[in-house]
Image (tube, rainbow, N blue to C red; front, side, top):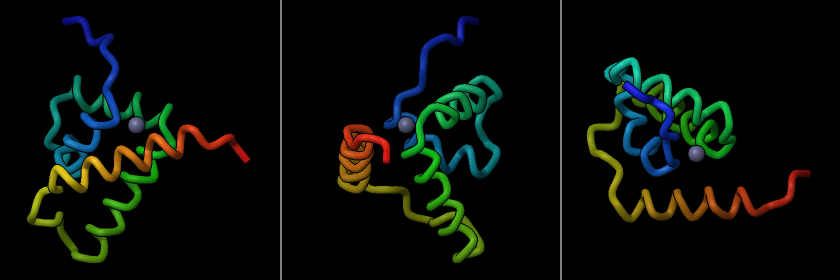
Length: 85
Ligand SMILES: [Zn+2]
C-alpha cells in the first residue's frame, strides 16, 4: 500500500475529530501527523479543537459546517501568504 500521497489541509480538517478520538486507521494517522509537522496553521487548528474539547469535556456533537470549513481554509491560505516574522 503506497502511502506517499500527502494529506491536504481540507482533508485534515475533515479527519480532525477522528484523530482526536483515536479513531483513524494507522495509515491516516501517520499522514495526519506528517501534515501537522509541516503545516503550522493545521497545528493551530488542532490546538483549537483540543481547547474546545477541554472546555466541553468532550468532542463537539455537531460537525463543522461546510461554510466554517471554507472559512478556515481561507485563514490557512492567508496565513501561508504572510511572510514569517
Ligand atoms: Zn495544513
